[in-house]
Image (tube, rainbow, N blue to C red; front, side, top):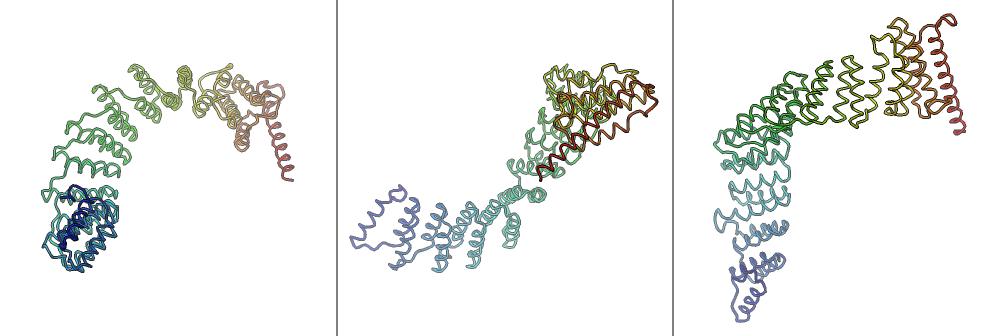
Length: 528
């Protein structure tokens, strides 16, 4: 009674009174005291009582050993628990109360699992088998759970084979523990095989197990296995969350399985799970990854019918897909539709729109998009700015370009990294030369090229040397490209525009050579 009330001091007072009156404490008295010590988490004192029993010739029984083993499992003190177990075996108490003697072994195996000590759990099993005791299903389930907690998947399946060997067929708890081990061991395919075996043996999987298994299959990219789990969930009337379906669509996209993405959407309808905006967005992403513009637009229409407002990323991916296929007009329509739905474009939207227009050869629309981007408070990145400037420089179909490029340079050149500005200006001048050649020697373009080269000479604030930060390799390559693009030399005065351009290029080349020589001599001086 004192032990149950957790009044350990009073329990020992009664024990001392028994001894004072000359009463010999028996096995039940010592067992009760040991139980009280265990409840008070005083294992050392419980162990001392066990030793005292043996000194006084009181033979512990199976209940005594089980009591202290339970206390060790609760503490947990696995070393002491194993020591007491060995004592129980040596004392011959292992068979005192028949089949119930598996209880201390099972208790200790469970404690080993909680302590992630799977090797000690198998040590307990070996002790059990050595004395001829047959583990029951609960014992095996605890051992599988210990394997799962320690992420020892192969050992868990080894226990399953032992169950069949000892004619202990697995139950639903066994399969749940094994599936959990597979999930933790990132082996969803093996878990699905167990699921099929469960269904053959009429063991109904729990909703928690099915949801956990579906998530594991999705994380592992096992698309076909995920649909197997979905079918099992339908049979068990378990409804996955919309987030699970979204993750499945993403897995289908990574596996380049557009069919699986649409199958997931169809499964949602069958299971009466309402697709969230994220789910529709994921399916559209799968269509974009598969370059299927028509399918993507179909999903977008379905998304709008379900009153889900697309995120800007949805439109960004659609505009990007238009850019890949050179459909600049469609990209502009999608952008207009985006604004109609009052979805605010972001910097990625504008970059995708500019790229789509440029890929379609519509530099005028691209320029308009960049200005609209700036008006919305977004600065173009270096790649967008450079692409636009080069597209304008090489634009065809115009006879002249009176001052067209320099205002754009003034506005967007700061978006380019300083080290890349010099090479960019040289490439722009080369683009203008090539465009002039295509237009039959357009002098206006050559004048523009000369002004661009002059801008390079004085962009650091004039006079030369050139801009203070230069990528020498890129600058040299761009300068060679420009030299190759220059119109051939003619008679003096034959073409003033050509002569001005060649003079500007020669000045840049000379300044670059002088700058490189100065840098090299300075470096040599430092080295000396």
